[in-house]
Length: 161
Image 1 (cartoon, rainbow, N blue to C red):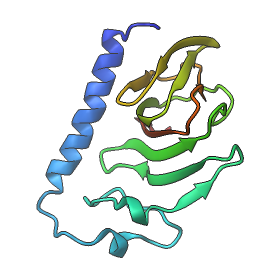
Image 2 (image 1 turned 135 degrees about the vertical axis):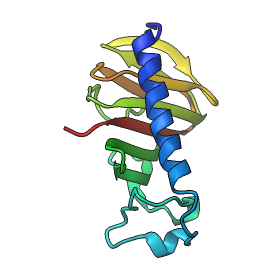
Image 3 (image 1 turned 90 degrees about the horizontal axis):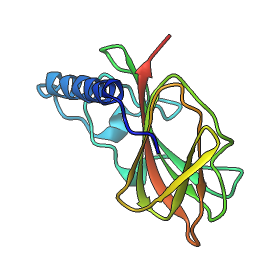
C-alpha cells in the first residue's frame, strides 16, 4: 500500500478544516428536525446543520444484492463538493468495477472484511474500524472477501468543476 504523501495529508486536513468551519459558522442557526429539512426528492440541503437520523435515511437496493443509504450529496457554501453514504456489500461482491474520480474518498469500515485495490493491485484486507483513504484520480476498487455482509460509510470531498 502506498504511503500518504504530505500533499495527501494536507488535502485531507484542508477538507476537514473546511467542514469544521462550515459547522462552526452554522452553530448559531436555530435547530430544526431533519425531517422538516428534507426537500422533495430526498436530498438534504448543505447549508444548514442537522443530525441525520439513520432510520430516516432512504434505502436504495443495489443490483449486487446490497443496499445503500444516501446521507448527503452536494456543494457546501464554501465551494467543496461533499458526498456521504453507507453501503451494505454482500459477501463476494464488489460495489462497482474499479474506477477513479477527481474527489478524495475515505471509506470507514463498520463490519465485514474488504479487500481494497489500487491500480488493479490487491492490498491488505480492511476490517471493522479501519479507514481506507483514496487520493484524487487514483484508480481503485473494493471487494467483500469475508463470509458476512460488509457495512461501510463513504465520505467524499472535492472541488466542483
